[in-house]
Amino acid sequence: MSISEMSRDHRDDTDNLLDHQDHLVAPSNRYIVAKVGDRSVTFPDVLISEIIILERNAILALPFYETAIIGVTHHQATVMPLLLLRLLMGEQRTLITESLTVVRLSKIADDLGNQNLGGVGIIVDRVVGSLTINEFQELDISASDNNSPKKIPQTVANIKENEYTPIEIILSSIPTHIWQPQRWQISS
Image (cartoon, rainbow, N blue to C red; front, side, top):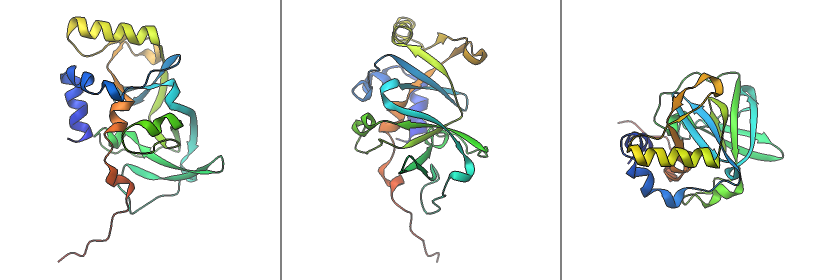
């Protein structure tokens, strides 16, 4: 099942989230909310090492990798791979702006799936705000009572209602082959 199919199922069926409860990480204080296209994605605060504004010219492209890996950058004496979350969620690629918002994952992300994702940079469209644990729990309760997609009133960036997708579901579904270089194919 692809990530876009999983996201679509998540919108249509709240049971899909229950199937992935073992992948969810409990935050210490709050959830950070980022926008990717029309969707809002929640990051538990313990999964975030830092939020970086990165200039496009600081990215070294990796042409033989999947399109979701747009390249690497040198940050704090390490090489940080950069994943375009928009493509991981099954949305169309858009032009990359001069300044990118990157959410760098902490070492706790190493425990998600079979991949070591600690230190990886996730490119989002923008960070729009945060939800406290209580607000997020109210969101869970109202979704289970109404048997509808999760929604909560939010005033940040003039967003009234939105559905929130946990980043853990997306990250645990990244196919392992995207980390391998693609080989040249001889056409016949």
